[in-house]
Image 1 (cartoon, rainbow, N blue to C red):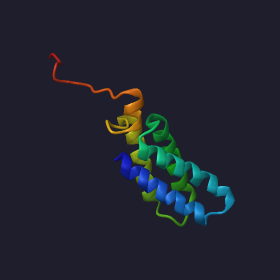
Image 2: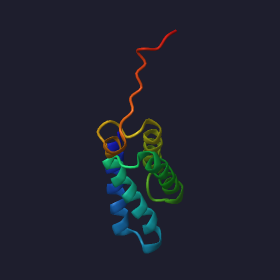
Image 3: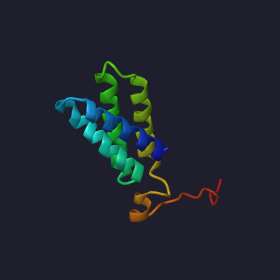
Length: 107
């Protein structure tokens, strides 16, 4: 999920950087950086809400694009912020990966 969201966000943002004027390009540069960080799995608890905000802004501000694509990527960003980066990420390598084991739970 992290890889798909990162690739989709980066490719879309880089494509928009090449086509957009200078003013909106700042939002696209932030989206491209967030996509690369998501792809790598670095700073996922911070980048996830950033993706949510950037994509909701893009969904409500752009008239030519399909807004549901932006809503989908925003939802993926929120889900990744809540779920975490996963075992195969730079966050797991740098800060450790915590696993919750529910087998020892008493009723």
